[in-house]
Length: 246
Image 1 (cartoon, rainbow, N blue to C red):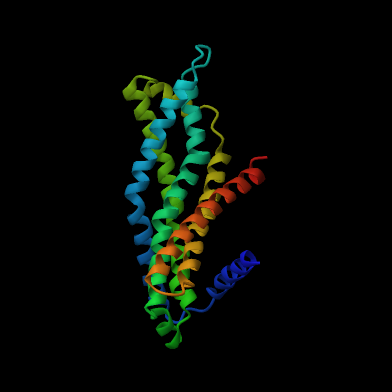
Image 2: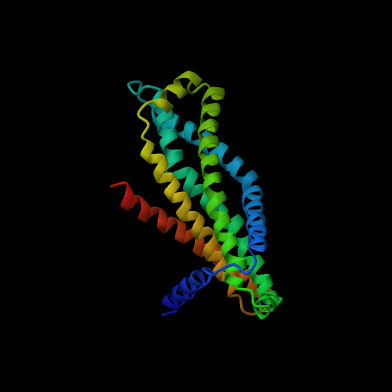
């Protein structure tokens, strides 16, 4: 019963976001601030993970393809599809669940404990719309961009790893990238990115917004938010794959 109660409160929070802004300029400023916090704040870790993710994919794929009958450009095809379909959207989102999720939950939890949210509500501000909605909208704008960047850097990292280690030449890698490319894979990756972006922003916002207690509860809420978000991302990943890749 607790699960259904939590889901009901979560949906009620999402519903409460949809209201006419009291001050559009104030909402826009908060939205741009969240875009900067989520996007630029996560850029470094996304770049590092993506490059090494692609590099490791190339090395491990080459290790598994031992038959001389399989052309070397197959390595590039495997790396391309693996990065676009799974690594870029899912792995980047799992990392962002920790980086962005804990930040959102901690920020809202601190505002709840210090009674800043109560003060805003007394002034007539819809706190769900002002505090939660800009975070979710910013995530929906920025996180898919980070996923696309992750895919590009992942493929580039795979190419560099193959070239520097002598596994596969740049020309062969480029040939494999262009051979048998399915544009639908890119669309699928973007659908995953938008779905994961909503989960990464809304679930931690729910736990942070509904914190009860003191500073200790903020830490617990942040930890729970990250765990639930990671599980939700993986579950959504399976559902989307089962529905869209039949």
